[in-house]
Image 1 (spheres, rainbow, N blue to C red):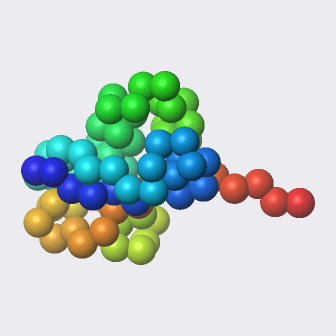
Image 2: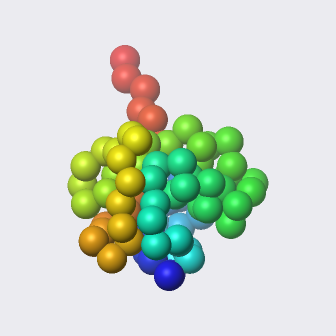
Image 3: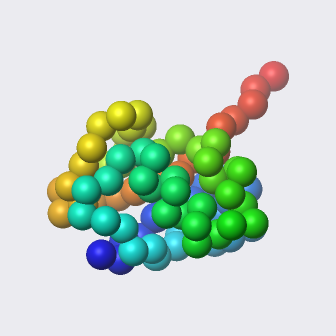
Amino acid sequence: MPREIKLFAYLAETIAPTVTIDLPETLDRDTVLTVVAMKYPLAKKEIESCNVAIDQSYITDEKFSLTEVKEIALIPPVSGG
C-alpha cells in the first residue's frame, strides 16, 4: 500500500521532504528502513542509520498495522556540541 514518509535534515535536502513508497501491511523499524533504502540506494547508508517515528513516537521493535498508522517519518541522528 503506498504511503507518504516524511524525511528530515539532509535526507529531505538530498531526496525530498516527503516520499511515497509501497509498504507492507505489517511494518516495523527495520522494514521501513529497508524499503526506503531499496528505493534510494545512493542514500542507503544514511537511511539505515535513521530513527523511525510512527505517529510522532520513535519506534524500535514494535510492529504496526499500516491501517492504524497516520504518519511515518525518518529522522537522521543528530550531533550536538
